[in-house]
Length: 412
Image 1 (cartoon, rainbow, N blue to C red):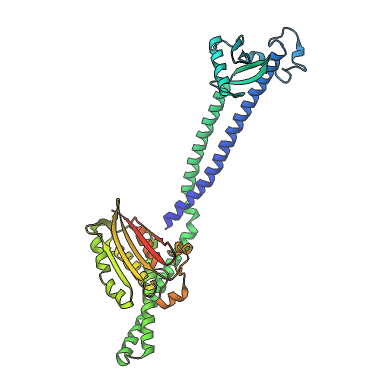
Image 2 (cartoon, one colour):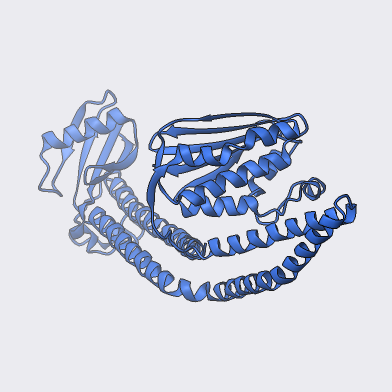
């Protein structure tokens, strides 16, 4: 349990940090992409205004093109840094001309092919290969300007790769820090749990001495007064208290999460059969219908006694909480590479939303019913801890709230 808590702490810390890192990664790269595209669109708009106004891109001495003209706000160096070509199209889509004086790597035929693809797509701006383009109306047709964006796109991709690498390195560093610091974070809980276990162990041993004396005295009185109601009540309550003490000790030991002494291969079918054999007589004595279907030759690896304890606890739980005239069934079967043990019983109505809490310690959905049956509320907790110690799982299902099916899955 402590190991699970530590890994849960690490998982939560990593999830929180990863969310922040992912948000920053997306925000920075999307903003960079948007700003890059916007700057290129401004350049394309400037080129369109120059072309529409029949102004030269390289004026000789006329500085007015930079003051109050399309190039206002741009550096004079922009003329030497901008590589572009223009395709003029008629209204029917045919190419009327190509301007490629400001680029060397594109032929007129390639420029016309670029324009045909853009016209077919129906888009007015975007990226085509390594070019940012703008489609605008011009002289009864269209003008398509293609701006070389190879350096800008490479810078966008470089920022994406660098930010991804930095994010991955940050996640790895935070994971190592969380791994190192998680032990310190759960240390108070570990100390508290150790004190709780020590108290349970000490209290259990201290209670056993007077409890044994009470039980012995009650047995002596029972031999002399066999029909005495008060003596019988003392015996019943001492047995109940003894079971509770044993359950608390068992639960405390399971919390230690110690590995199994030795995993051995055994017959699950035979192990369950041994525990289930007296169930028919007990069910008949209490007026319940009982059926069982144990598939032969199911072999698993683990602790035989622990699995028998799980089955015993689930059957005991079914005996306690089956409604009057109800039914109990036990099924053991193979399921892919696993084995499943299912204990089904009808019951008084239970809210399906509460079934998930049945494995909580000391939780009892009906306290009045539990007082009648003597339930302590930790039997299912012990069954869950024992199942997980075997590398398996346990869950509970209900369809109508009037029946419960506890399903134990064990690896084969």
